[in-house]
Length: 114
Length: 114
View 1 (cartoon, rainbow over the protein chains, first blue to last red):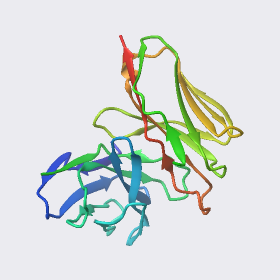
View 2 (view 1 turned 90 degrees about the horizontal axis):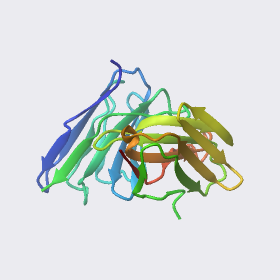
View 3 (view 1 turned 90 degrees about the vertical axis):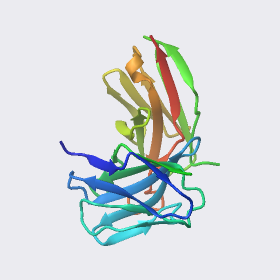
């Protein structure tokens, strides 16, 4: 089955630690995205990538980093510089950046900072 | 003012009722309008997609866009308990323009009571 796989589903982190969230897709999509979802705030774009070895900051990139070494993979690192990292993180993909909004989402990763 | 506004609800209706979910947007350059459905602790899935003004019907679901009033609606006929979810509206402009980023509303939580 084609889709987007995010792992882990739940993650707990101590303050001051970096954590990496995994996102893998087998849809052969060029574009991949990371969103953060908080209650009452909707989805906010962290980073996106249109092609391998290229990525762009979204609206709330501070404290996050990404890489895109393979078409299928777009991991997100939440660094200790992120002041309020507890949230639900969603990875998504689309055929291309030009595609008209049809994003396919993973099941999400819930990060809790203790 | 947020670019896409959505009443967070919750909205509770009895099974079989007609549900009306609504969003407003502020940017007249938006051309593409979507509704995503998100079940609890899952990623959003695309439900309806509309280009410019008009109606689009898919089974029990009808999406409506009125660009003159900047109003987006989703109607659900014969609502079922399985429709209980958060519904997110989203909008974007044409690729290459300043408004090509997909902007999400905060989501409306719907509960259909059996």
